[in-house]
Structures are given as structure tokens and as C-alpha cells.
Length: 397
Image (cartoon, rainbow, N blue to C red; front, side, top):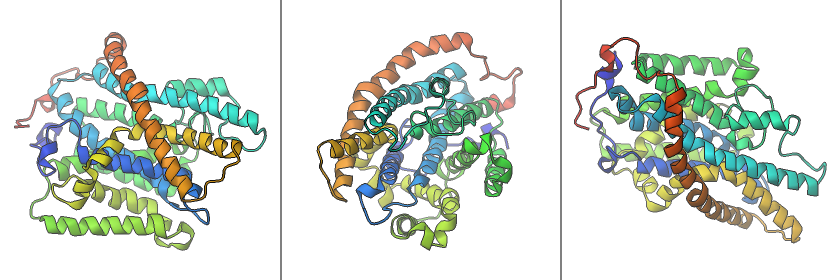
């Protein structure tokens, strides 16, 4: 089946969101996931006796799933119609990812240097073996493609390398009319099998997490194309709410209540989330009237979605400052009050960073970078010969 034949009228998720560049409920879900990652990295702030969110690292897979949905929603039809080229697309992705990444990387470098100066030999939060080399890798978003085998500068930014790599590959396939559902299913299946074996992937490819990221990203593309753009009919609101409750309860039960070492289910928790729970959660979140849709499209969660990138990249720096402040002022804030204070500071700091760093830098970079990229980029968005797959589909959207 060709790409143009698979593009149909968008329908099935919240009507107020169809045609909008932002899916509000999905923004809210992403904001909740960002807070989940922050909680995971400082669990002892919330429950000193044991891990509070032992499986919280899995939220990063949800980011990649959401990214696949958003790429399809915002860009696919525009690329197929030829209304956005490679230079503009790359400008959008760099302006979105790079400015805050640079800010977070530099702030982490300063904080870690001060921290290790104040507490020499206590513990190391960053690998300093090759600071100039790893700085260059981070500068060009190459920090996690297997060129260096340890966390460097801002460790949370590991996910940006597979994100930009998948975005570029996705654009190429869409622009050439080759991103068929068969290819996506095959890619997800092969990546899942390869991930389960692990042995042959030891080294650069495995350490980059590119294979794992491809599973969620590919699932997001399939989810949008076949379940969000034109979902199966016959599922009523009551049935969707039942499934919403089942998915939510299963995730919360294992993620919060059962430590992984005691749970047989948690042994394969990552596959359960990536292949079932997260796709189901995204689908149900975008269905009009479900309680997940109402929760994540509410103003507090939409706001969290707006600042989610800042929350994700800056929460570790804030945790370092908070812990040093406790030490400096000989103050001991007990759990869970330390956790609540931590989250409050993270939200305030992320809000300020969004308004004064992330958003203005994104706008300026978009206006200045595209003309430069248009001069140096290969024209990969146009096939060498005309192809029927490039014909714009009939659509009322």
C-alpha cells in the first residue's frame, strides 16, 4: 500500500484537536511523563525507605511513542504535499531540541564542577575523561550513538541522539513515499526481536538505545495512521473508559506499588509498557470524552506539557542545587516533603526557562537557521523522478 493511499481524513480523536498543530491531551500526557522521570531520578525525596517509582525510567519510551504520533500529525501530510522541505523540517527539529540542550549541558557542567570541587572524591556525576571531545559530541547531538561509552555532560540528553536520528530517517522515508505500514510493522518487529537478544547489539548500537527508541517511535507512527486517523468503529465511550481504567490501574500497580525484584510481571515490564500499555494509553487519551482525555487535556497538565522539555533536561541540575542547599544550611527536609519541594522548584524553574530561554531561542533559531540550511542541505525531500506516491491525497482536513 502506498503512502498516499494510507493518508485519509483525520477523525476519531478529540474533535477540538483535529487540525491543530498541538494535541492538547497528548501534551498533558507528556508533561506527566516528564514529572515521572524527575521523580524516578530522586526517589529518595519521596520515600526514604525504598524506591518510590522503581520503574520510572520507562517514561522515556513514552516520549518516543508520543514523538512518532506528533511527527505523523504535524508533518506527514505537509511533507507528502510538498509544503515543507528538508531544510525547514530540520530547522524545526534543531530549534526545538538544541537551544535548551546547550543551556542544560552548560549548566550541568558548571554545577558538577562546583559540586566536585566542594566534595572532592565523594562521587562523580559526569565523566571528565575527555571533556572537550564529549562537549563536541553533545554540541552536535552525537553524544549517544556509541562514540563514547559513559554519561557525558547532561546525562538526560542521551535520548536526543536517537530522537534526531529517527526524525531524519522518518523524513527521508516519508518524502520518498516509502514509509508504508508494512515497513513500520517490520521495523518494530525486527527491533523488538533484536532488543530481546541483546547479545549481537552489545557495543555502540545497543548503548545508543537507538533500537529501543525505534520500537516506540515506529509504534507511534502506526498508532496515528491506523487508530487515530481512522480508528475502528463500534467502541463506545463506556468501553473506552473501562479500558482506560484497566490500563491506568495496571500501570500504577506495577510502577508504584510493586518493587521490580518482587514482581514477576515487572521482569518484562518494559515490553509490556512499550508494546501494549503506552500505545493503549496514548490512544485512549486522545479519544473524546474518556476520563484520560479529560485529565490530560486539563489546564494544569497542558501547562506541564508546555514546559515538559525543560522539566526533563533541567531536573537533575535542580536536584543537585537542592541537595547542596540542604548540606550548606544543615537542613534536613524529610520525605515526602523534600519531594514536593523538589517538584515545586522544578516546575517554577522550568517555567522560567521555557519563557526566557527555550521559547525565545527557538523562535530566533527558526528565523535565522533555515536560510543557511537551504544553502547547504541536499534536496532530499524531492525524488529524482516523479512518483505517483507524491500525489497529494484527497482530504477535507
